[in-house]
Every structure is written in structure tokens, then in C-alpha cells.
Image 1 (cartoon, one colour):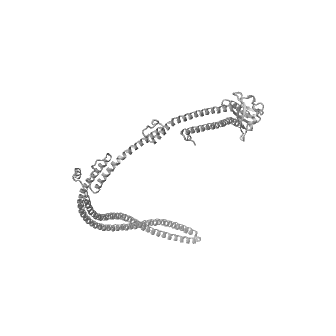
Image 2 (cartoon, rainbow, N blue to C red):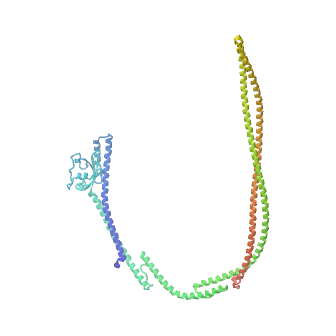
Image 3 (cartoon, one colour):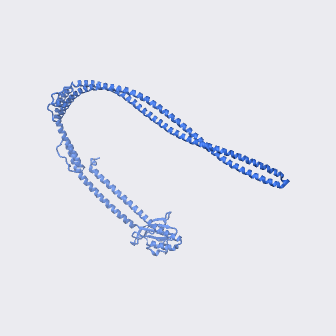
Length: 589
């Protein structure tokens, strides 16, 4: 494939051509789709108009069914409404029956109620109503194209017709739209789309030419300059630096690359000179570092050094001086550490002895507190046992008081029974008295009867004798019950006194129980406190023993520290320090 096909201009032209083809294809597809959509929209509009007309028929038919008007009146009213119904510039609605007799036609009033128009034909000889009725679907809707006179132009034009059947009145409702109106709208839309496509094509072509003419010359100039740079020309200017687009950025990148090549050449020239100076500096520093490694802290770099290594020499001298001062301070510090270590070792030994003495005292104190805690604990347990025994005595006293209360209740019951028995004996005494009177009356009557009532008189005498015995027995029982009642009252009084005494005893026992419980609680708290004190003393004893052990370890560590300080002092004295340095002397002081 030729190299021209890979050129940037060829790619831009190809991209513009592809954009033009895509725009044209999209425009034609949109126009075709818009035409079909226009016809579909117009058909939907026609159906909507007939639905509106049908709604008027439904409303009037409902009034007919409700008996508000006759069907003829309803049809006349609907015909007036449909005659006045308009849409668009010349749109109207008509209606005819199955015999193709018009019921409504705004522009053909002579056809309304006249002859059948079944044989009506268009300019091509086709029967109009056969076409309309032949396209009816299952729902009674028809969409067809006929040729009919346009009321506006008085010319026969193709017309898109929509009709639907209304079964209750046997009417066909129809309307239509002339194709010329639809085609005019579509033609206008096509013209506008083609004009827009033409303008877009012109703009794309102009923009592509402008882009190519503005891009290719600067790019070719940059390509030529980069070729001369590759041949070694690093002094010529780079074209396109003033351009503000990506080409200008490319030119700046090429200029930066040229400057980098220039700097690289200058650096390579300086590198050889600096390499010789660097070797000399390395030799001097190696010699001084060897002395420094041997412990000579008086070494310095006093030779003439290049500017880039002068700071290294100063840093080396400053470092050696600081280390020298540090070693001098370190030796003095080690000597102080030796002195302080000996003092610390002596103090640690003395403190260890005191700690051991304190640990022994704490151990004895802990043992005494343990014995005291055991004694208090025993006292608390005995107090708790006494409290439990007092509680048991209180419970038994309470049970005795309950028994006395039940005894009082029983005696009260006996007293009530005695009162009832006294009432019964009184009743028996009255009955005996009445019986005696009756027997006396019977004896008097028997005496009056003479010999015939003698037997009855004997019986009356026996009855009077029994009544007297019953009366005597009732009086004896009453006396016994009276005596028993007095004894029962005495027993109730004594039992009540016993219950009062038991309640007082129970109150005293409860007070004693509270006192003993308080003593037991106090003893328990004392035992707890002594246990805590004993535990704290044991812990303090353990801590003291641990401190003693730590003091022993500290003493050993202090001894090791003194030994290490001696070794450190010996090692520090191996370094050679310049004592004549006034700065070092001032820092050491």
C-alpha cells in the first residue's frame, strides 16, 4: 500500500468522508422514518376524531335508553354537533348507515337523507364505499385511501379515510385527511433536512481543509528540524514555538530535547576535568580516614580542595573536632562514673542490709496480724452462733405465743358454748315449769272427773314429778355451767396474760437478736478488715523481700557498672586528643 495512505491528511479526509456518509445515511433514514411516522400520527389523529364523535353518540344513546328523548331526537342532536365539528384547516366528520345513506355531511347537505351513495366512484373508477367497508377489521374500524374533492381547493385529491361502525344506530362514523397536506408537511421537512445536511457538509469540508492546512506545514517543519538535530545540528532554532496548539507543545518538547543534548555535551566536557580532581580528593580523604581509624583525633584536612569538595573537608574537620571533644568529655564522664559507682555500691550494700532488717520486722508483724485475725474470726463465728440460737429462741417463743392465742380462742369458744347451754337449760327449766302447770291442771280436771279421771290423775302426777326432776336437773346443770364459765373466764384471763408476757419476751428476744446480729456483723467486718490488713502485710513483706533481692541485683549491677567504666576509661585513653586546642579546652571545662 502506498505511503500516502498513511499520511495525516489522508486520514483526516477519510474521517470527514466517513462523517459525511454517516450524516447523509442518518438524514435519509430519519426522513423515511418521519414520513411513515407522519402517516401513522395522522391515522391516530383521525381515529381520535372519530372516537370523539362516537362519544357524543354514546352520550345521546344513553339518554335514549334512559327515556329522556327519542332516538330520532338524539340522532338529530348528534347530526347538528357533527356538522359543527372541525379540525385542522378543512377537516370534518360525516356519518352514513348500512344502506350508504348519509346522516351527516357538512359539505354535501344534498346527500343527507337522500339516495344511497353505494355506487359513488372516485376519478379512477373505484367504488369509494366498497373500499371503505372492505377494509373493516374485527373491531369495526377501517383505514383506506380514496380520491375525493377537497373543499378548500375544489380539486379531487387522494384522501386518507378512517371510519368505524356504531352498531346501536347502524351508523358508520368517518373522517379523513387529504394526502396533499401530509405530503406538503413531509416535503417541507425533507427540504429543511437536506438544507441542514448541505450546511453540515460544507462546514465539515471547510473545517477539514482548515485543519489540514494549519497542521501539516508546522508538522513538516518540526520533522525536518528533528532530522537536522539527529545529524548533529544543536544550534539552529526550533520552528513552531509560538503555536498555542499541541504542535506548539511538540515544538517546546523538541526544544527541550535540543537543550538537553547541548547540556549533555557540555557536561561530558566537564566530566573529564572533574574526574581528575575527584581522584586527588579521594586520595587525600583516604589518607586522613586511615589516621582517623587508628585513633588519631588530631588529624585535619588542610589541603586545597575544589569548591564542590570544600564543604566535605570542612564537614570532616568538624566531625573529627566534635568526636575529639566528645572523647575528652567521655573520659571525664567515665572518671565521674567510676567515683559515683563506688559510692552507689556502698549505698546499695547499706540499703540492702536495712531492707533485710525491715523484711524481718514485717514478717513478725504479719505473723502477729495472722493470729489476731484468727482470733477475731473465731469471735465472729461464736457471735454468729449466738445470734442463731437467739433467733431459734425467738421462733420458739413466737410458736408458744401462737399456742396461747389458739388456747384463748378455744376457751372463748367454750365460753360461748356455755352461754348457749345456759340458754338451753333455761329453756328446759321453763318447759319443766310449764309441764308442771299442765300436769297440775290435768290433776284438777281429773279430780273433777271423779272415778273416770283417776287414772289420768295418776299420769298427771307422774308427769308433774318428772317435770320437777327435770327442773332440778336443769338448775344443777346451770350452776355447773356457771361455775365452768367462771373457771373459763379465769383461764382466758390467765392465757391472755400469758400471751402478753410471751409477746414482751419475744420483743426482748428480738432486741437481743438484733444486738447479737450487730455484734456478729461487726466481728465479721473486723475479721474481714484484719484479713485485708494481714494480706496487705503479707504483700508488703513479699515486696520488701523482692526489694531486698532487687537491691542485691542492683549492687551486683553497680559492681559490673564500675568494672565496665574502668574498661571504658582505659579504651578512651587510647585516643589521641589535642589538648592545645583552645576550643576543645573550653568545651572540656
